[in-house]
Image 1: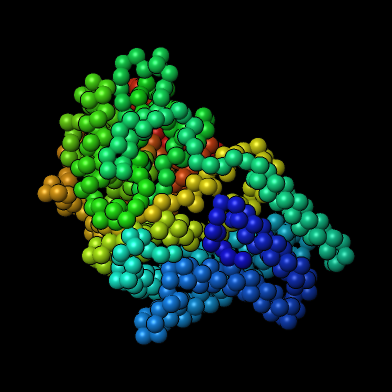
Image 2: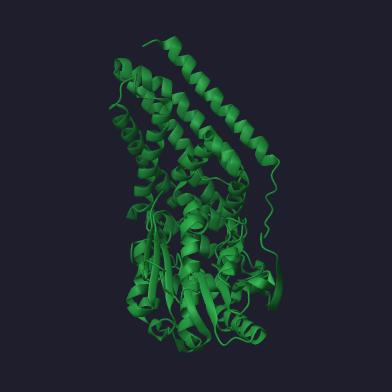
Amino acid sequence: MCSFQTGPFDKYLYSGAFYIQAASCYRPVLEWLSNEEPEQRETLMNLIRDSWYRSTVDAYSSAISGMGLVNLEASSSGPHEMARLNNILTIMVQKAVNGITERVSNYSHETLTLQAFFEIWIETCAKVHDDLINSEEFIDCITETINASLKIYAKGNADHGTMHE
Amino acid sequence: MNEGAGKLDIDEEINAFRERYELLSEKFQNLKSEQSWHTPCEICFSFEGMTVREFLAPSSNNPAPKAILIVYSHVNLPYVIDLTEQHSLVSRLIEAGRKVYLVDWGDMNGEARSRDLSVYLHDYIDKSIDFIIENTGIDQVDLMGICQGGTFSLCYASLHPEKIRSLITMVTPVDFHAGESVIWKWARKVDFSKLEERPVNIPGSMITLFFQSLRPFDEMMRNIRVIQNPESLKNLNLTVLIDRWVFECPDQPGLAFAQFMRQFYQKNKLVRGEFELGGHLIDLRNIACPVLNLYATADHLVPPESASALKNHIPHERYSEITCDGGHIGLMVGTKARRAILPKMAEWLVNNHKFLKDGTKCHVQEE
């Protein structure tokens, strides 16, 4: 599952899958809210982290692959930037997890509906993602990646007229 | 907590969601979603791959010929302005007594990569305007620019004020640094010189991916609401048309794209009065016609601060604006557009460049 959708129809499929995934975290959330066992909180955070990591980190990884940067030689900046990007995204995932659990803890297991949980999930992710794409560290990383991509294509594919996808 | 009951509720809710999704998928598969123009139209002029499309109006609607040329952004395809009868900018302009023309930039082939911005201004738009003037017998044309096409239109109206009767800009970036758009932030440090030196066209799929990456979770929420809301089945045809349009970004001509990003986004030359094209300096103060500026207050692609900066460059007696709550695409095809924005725009055109009640400013609020 990837949070960047690739076509007009599969975007509903991906979004639906994301909803189902959030729903699968809902039951552990209710359990945590009903007895607040520290171990359950940890389980919950792992679930959210795993889901978020897959949806977002995979999206950026596939975007970078789409730009052809996976084929860069080791000496170029591509792999370095990918590692850096991965690191930034991991920090962001933690922020999302903390944000979701913090907001969820304002509810009780009786008041938190699945829809409310999903909206908290999405709103928190949207806020964290917005902070991410506006952060200088992320922009620097993306800029380096785009510059590397432009360099490769201008050098190697000018005869084709269009960048190869 | 009654775990058994809770589990049942959740399972039921998920199953209900799955059923709604399957119903939606089934409906999707039966819908026609090819690109098409709602209003009958024909190509009336072409030049080096660029074409001008004329929308055919019932003759009784056009007693005295007035014509408007729409210059759409290069970043998306223009058919979004004419999706259905209700969601058609073209229809509203025809109702306002205009013969409606549209510049279609054409397919991006290998040759397009080396086309610079002056080709778009000096050749494509200028030749289109001259064609309309010659074929309709009018002296001046109304010009309407949408998004990037608005920036092109501002440049053109500054270069050829004698040919333009009025100018409408819609979601148009003017001050590219105002409002700190994500596009500006990301473009600041990109080295476009490589692309200028050896231009290659940028695949449209990369542009789509870029837009998708800006607000993926908001988009996901919208998609879930479409699945969950039984009412959405009624408007599915429109939803499919818009969805398809969003994913159909055309390839970008390498050189013109690089020039646009460097000159406008990086150096902000338009509002600084420093943008030069083919030996001509673009000075927005040269624009001599009435101007109507339409923009959205929650536009994340063209921040309102960027679009509204136009008022600092046009004398207030010739400047009008329509603002609305909402975002970039909603201003063109949303419910508010259909009910309030486009009729207001038509009113401005018909009513001698003023609104009937609100003078020169109008704000359309969230419903």
